[in-house]
Image 1 (cartoon, rainbow, N blue to C red):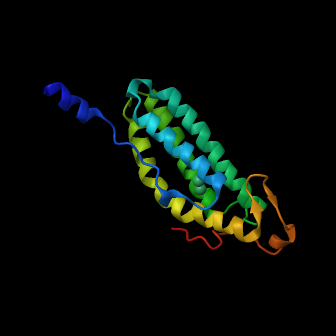
Image 2 (cartoon, rainbow, N blue to C red):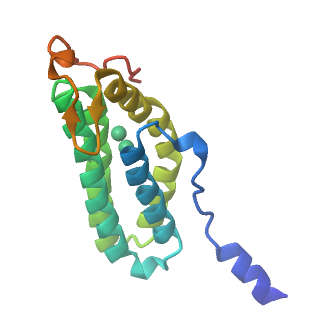
Length: 167
Ligand SMILES: [Fe+2]
Ligand SMILES: [Fe+2]
């Protein structure tokens, strides 16, 4: 049936949440599940109605990245570390996308959501998982945002990515 084919062709491919996305920090993983849910909401929304959901997603991502950067600063990373730089690049691109969408390119939000769905597993498994392991190693509780023993990070200052590889 022609109608069936049309439906199959327009059904978006959603991004599954899988165990391999877990970083080992429950609060970080909760934020990441929201991130994935919002990508899926965008992909399931008709392109001419995506702007409000995209804006909500952008605000959520600002908070998501700020949360990780706050934890980095609290545990010895310097402000200009490369994980934070990666976040800044993503946010800059996301803001440009909003401008292009308003400026007639109605497919760009879908393309950005698809690109972020591809980008995210690599980021979660490297920089975010590395941060989660670091938080655990210095005894940082991400729920209360406190260190069990502040002296544990007294001599730790990471200007790069610490133990996290940065490509
Ligand atoms: Fe993250
Ligand atoms: Fe991150």
